[in-house]
Figure 1 (cartoon, rainbow, N blue to C red):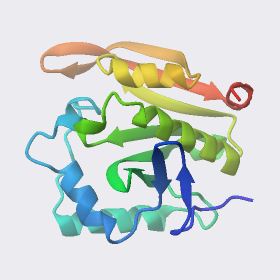
Figure 2 (figure 1 turned 120 degrees about the vertical axis):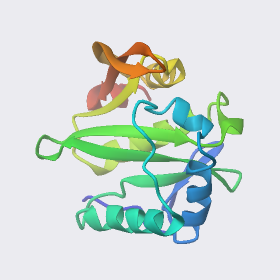
Figure 3 (figure 1 turned 120 degrees about the horizontal axis):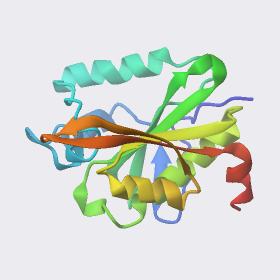
Figure 4 (figure 1 turned 90 degrees about the horizontal axis):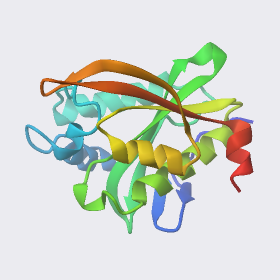
Length: 193
């Protein structure tokens, strides 16, 4: 029943395509993610955690290890986001608690030219739909922080509800921010159509 997206398969939206990461994508992703000392995208994606330092080769090993950790029938945990054939980011999931099927999703649009254009919303919608169709999940969660209002709007646009707000638990640039937990239940997701 569970299926991993094959390397030649794609999830297509109106403007966004999600697809498996290939060996040829590793240098492209590396350049997008590690572009300079302070990449712009990292200021919004959990900047209170440092960006893991990687060389191209250690990043390649990191991606191979991620694939090797997947179970034989488990869907890929990270896909590329493409717009008009250009790689602009990735969607991910991770298990908060696998035995109870508690899964969280994430998205990174690394190229600021593709912010605020609806690409992230479309990519995350395709991703959540795919995960609900391939895994026996009761809910899909998303965690962000209170300064990332764009991410909270994306979650709301997709029907996610704020399920928890941990006040003043993130410090960034000397200020406190809240951790925001959002989620959508399977039955809520299915009613959207």
